[in-house]
Length: 452
Image 1 (cartoon, rainbow, N blue to C red):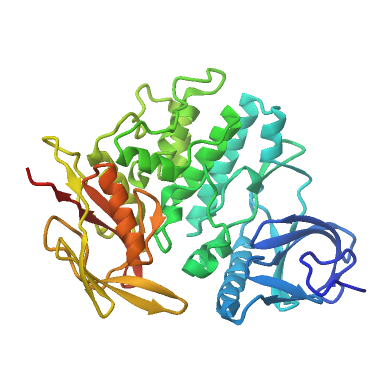
Image 2 (image 1 turned 180 degrees about the vertical axis):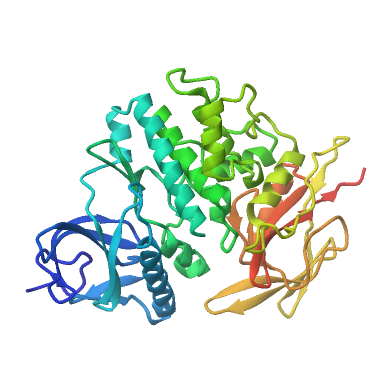
């Protein structure tokens, strides 16, 4: 059997696990894994998924290896998460969760053998326009039950979207392609940025913050976005764009479903709006709550963040999104200072760089930041918190990104550029995701009020 020195999919006819599985067809390349149609030793159709994060891997012969030595640790971590995901999935016996039968190591990577689902991606069904309201309603009920089962086990799906839901010949939805490996990759920061770990329109805001705690409500947000697409034919507004609009006191670009689409059960539309609140705290927290909405159809839904919301609402959203620094939701969460709207026509100015010495930079608000070499990159670490204005910055915090603009800050020049842009929009505070100890939290930084 000949194989190009560096090619991605396994060739047709490749056997795995000492001949137990034979590859018959390439199905899909999802960025983190390649899926194949195969047959087992009894000629039954199966799906084989190969752990293959293509941004850092390549194939030589049948073996999978990294493109650079520096990627080996990341690859080992992703393979480990892939195997753990397969083992966790194997425990589920649910008609709407793909069944994993086996996981094994071969060709210097890992594989899982799953049920073959004879059907179409939900994406295709949406594009065909042949989903009735009753079918969408049934899909919602079944997926909510599946998610409740997953969440009760302590797991999250982390990658719900129309292309990860298969609809079989009886219109039965099946969840596939869990995101454990993607979540693991996102923890490795800049080295893994070429691998997409979020999906525009479907990923909630907390998925964009590396290391931020995620919750069942994160999956419910993604399910809400998926059903929104099924109902309207269009994916909803991307969560970072929504957050930016709220920070600028503009309209939330999300268009609520409540009061529209009379062919659908009103409670379903209300539940989708609630599930897609920008703030995790204000969302539906589990599938049972969602089902109650569908059953009871409350007359006055709690509104989703919308229509030039006050900055105090934004602060609640920001606090809820990325600041849980504990796995125990019952514990007190860390909070960031509230963002307040400009008053008395104040003009806000960015703190400016006043001096630098030996890699430490001082700003006009008294803040000092060290630019520290880190491998081939640098990191920004707070050595002295700002003296002027309110702040949540602490000594030792490492700046990762500014969340209002949605841009990373890895160098002093990038930080200065961010602060200038916030000044141009006359915003009173910057909101940074920072690494503090072993977790990621949000920390606000006040702009400076221009004196008359």
